Image 1 (cartoon, rainbow, N blue to C red):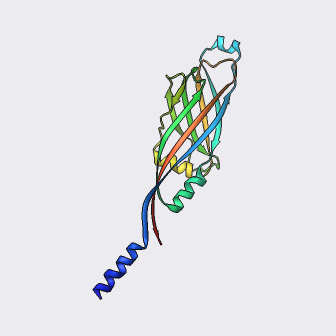
Image 2: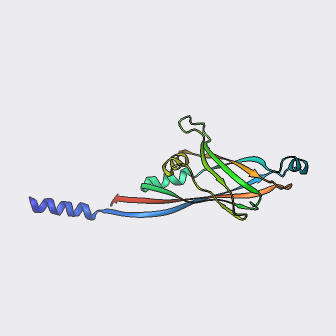
Image 3: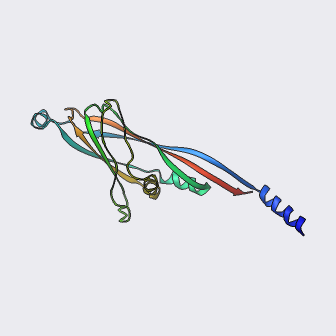
Length: 171
């Protein structure tokens, strides 16, 4: 009987596949901030302007969770383009569905030094950010402070999320 049990356990063990899969989910959004009339710049050289965009990677995160346990980390969060005028960036995040259990939170609140590319630190815990991103589309509110140019500024926001998926499937 012991030999049968050991053989049965060995058969079950050989009929399972385990491993780790990885994927990077990348989202790029273009944002246009309106130019500021010269008269406004003379009166107050440092001005704050706001813009928002929606990102949605919840289907991708859901697909990965169907395969196995997902651990997620943020690879990169950047703002690029002609960012030399920006002195401060604040980004908020909120689900677009109005979920009261997920209020508006600050994603980034940082002073800017590099005139070409702004690496934005993520302030909210990774698991909280993943919770927001996995529930559906989210709205990101961008608030930029600086000496804004007279012409419109088109900037790109890039978010890269790295996922490790623990796979354990019977065959």
